[in-house]
Length: 337
Image 1 (cartoon, rainbow, N blue to C red):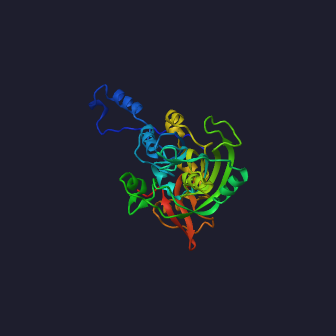
Image 2 (image 1 turned 45 degrees about the vertical axis):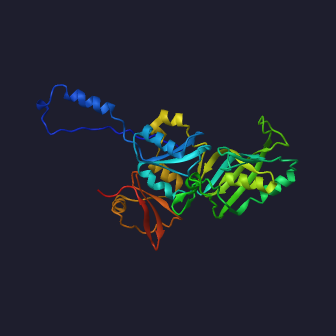
Image 3 (image 1 turned 90 degrees about the horizontal axis):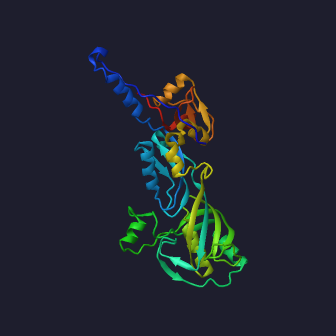
């Protein structure tokens, strides 16, 4: 879905007559114009986050690549995880909170027999137990019990806030943190392959489980690993996690950080294209476009849910929805003035 942006030329003006300027002024201005980086485009970038990077690391790198501070992200990934991370650039940061990003998919590996402090491979080992003879039917039943709408207790070392402080910060300061269960939806929790723990080779009796998870926002895959291990009586933790989809954005849309750095602004899907790909479209005439820019409401469009509003030339004007016979704006991208 990545589209190239249209380059914009910088311009310079002066009130002094040409004869009043040094002979070298015009070449100097031309050199400055040539050296000045193009303005960062408004739009979305889908990044394939590398292992070991925080989501903030990716944002910081993107700010350097695009030479702008106005970049945000949707859907934090832990440093251990890789995969789809959505960035908003410029005015498109306003769009992030309105995108349908509630459904997510992951590829993961659960290691049975080892419990950790963080429920994943980054935490210290708490306990090791023998897995024993794990029949396929018993494993399938335990995974089925963690599928559908379930009450899940997030990992104590998580970003959940307690009285304004992150749970992980409280744990690191020595507090004993117990989080309340929350209702989440696990649409799929499927075993893809059992693997030998030492070699990673396929093994029908292996205790490393390669799984696919489709779930709602707020679901912790490492909590699934912990709870599966607990149900089987041997403990378990998450040893690998890759997000393959968030909302409509998949790894097929994602660029590596190297490819992003190489393409820079050309890696950004322009705001209008991003808006049109994620929402129904409403094209208005020039007079209506002016009304939108001034925040004046239009008659209802008769479109379901939020929709993008576009000027006759295709410029993205707003994200709106119908309420009470008229359009009301969730975001206006082109305010007057």
